[in-house]
Length: 320
Image (cartoon, helix red, strand yellow):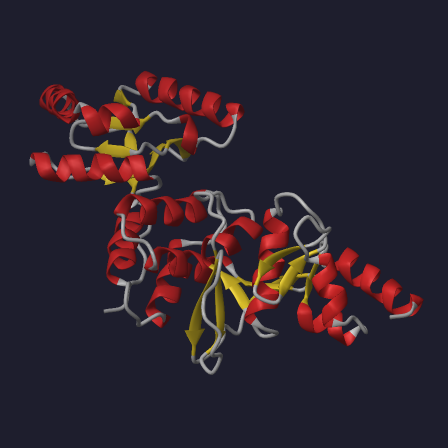
């Protein structure tokens, strides 16, 4: 290989975060012997996936793992699920696994950190970053949820996207309606909860606790107004008793400023005559009986506040 081939490879590696496929290297004039020398034990390169190499030693970055997944899966591959949400800036549980959609005719199997999912039609809407193509937020959320088995994990990924304003409940409902495939039952259940106003796994735990207790069902995350002024959006609200329950978790408040705003909101509700109950996620999970007792006592002693107008959270348009 001449200097021109070396320069072309250097440019390609710079563009692809030091990741290259065997086919790309051979196209630039490399030989199997040259590749083998660099991939030898103790050599300067390493194998990330079959036929995909990292021209560096050490632990690969998430960017390099994503690019390796696309090069392994093929030119039409599209990243989805948690890896796509990470690229899109949606806060979700970390995962080094990369889920990739490929055309149904692709015969390649999943390998290493890459999970291939064959589809008869690749998504029409996708975005890209250099050589990496990935789906938009609603598709990424629904795909991630379909491959989960724990309801709290599904709540976490759906609530994160909606809480951060990256997509609406109706966007998720529309995407789910198109995914008539195995694994949709749990996402449909959680989407209905999100449509009721649930915005975090901890709020979902509170909802489960209330349902099991026989207490009156509250409104979740409604908008409370005094006149035309927005007073608050409590996590749970019983208008007939003017009782609000708040799940106090820093995990679901995105900054210290958000946390301070939440505490100011609590003070405003108290000043308006609302009985505000505060529960941590740990209390909801581990001291459920005590939580229910406090809510029951507050409901028994409460009375409606005529000055407060309640607007329930908008529900998604779920298809049957």
